[in-house]
Length: 483
Ligand code: PMP
Image (cartoon, rainbow, N blue to C red; front, top):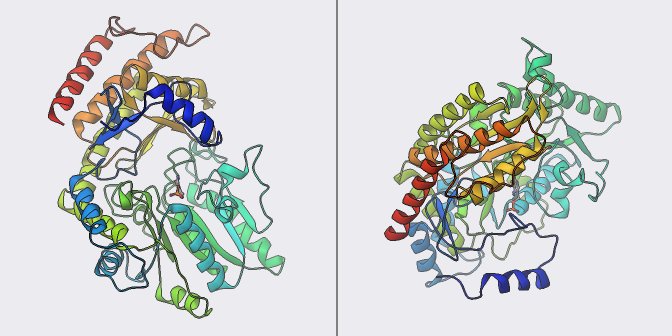
């Protein structure tokens, strides 16, 4: 099902015709995924993988209600938003209905990059200024304009240099960041981390320049699943607004109920942005995004006299799909599921800290969790090699997909589809424990074993892998039969 070529042929054609710069997961042994259902993905041999990283397949891979909504609309009409269409206005009504009051006007786009690009245009037009503040390690997309505000990219050796109208404030990472909670006991970390924002604003003022805006993910994902200190965004937004700038929340990864307690991650900090950018989960795999802003900012954009047109942004198919996604989140109580399962997962992951020295920090909210691996808990020295090893072993031995990220690629990231169950959390925990136990045993030696060193007939360092393998095979069999 879904396979037209044998895997080796697919690899050959990809190597020949797809730019080598395009990222490929598990490059030395890539996965060929041909089908998905819920929180599971299947390769060409029918092997089932538990997906712990795909925050795009938000309500579950190929959710039938989303698929049906898209098919039906595609078979009816797909045109552009220069015609009236009910799916478009309903999508805008539902989306803005989920946002705080002043955020009532939408522009539809096709991706997170496009959303952030338009947000920059809106901010710069509204303030008639160009300078932006962004956070270190941030990623806001692949377009030229948003690469300029993405230190995650421009700080790489081959990246384009940062333009002088972009200013980088430290990422509010109190564990491994520039200012660590261990160095500032009892201090207000929000104040410490917002001081550089104040300094940038003061410098701009002294130079006779002003600030267009401040853009930040409400919880930084590429930065290593960062949970900013309480009060951080409130203080940051106050400083930015006092300097005449607008506040942009990039909710491309973390929006639509993932944090469990709220629909939007910025709400966890009690702030209201001036512009919110959404995409990825909104289409459950279909390209759709939006920029939501205030009537004042939208009106200033209109007053330029330059009409906004986006061929595919807001087409009826994309809007029908986004409407179905938002309906499913509500109907299936997925925000609440994220809260309950996320709390359980986080609490269980925290237990690892008592057993395994390699776990430096465990943080998260809802189904957005990070486990930071360190060589030494005192110095918090990152253990990048171990993170890489675990990512591969989780795939090869346990058929569980996780990824690592952060400036040192030592944070194991979990952001699964929102239908992730407590049983899935247990599967992850069991497999992860097996990896940690294996690692711990190897730590006295200098080398890591090959990530697939344990085959299905072996026992692990603590004798648990037979149990976990058996459970995984049982799950696979059950799923394959049920699909
Ligand atoms: N913002 C954030 C926070 C993202 O994580 C991404 C994609 N990883 C983008 C923007 C860009 O989105 P897209 O790939 O849909 O253009």
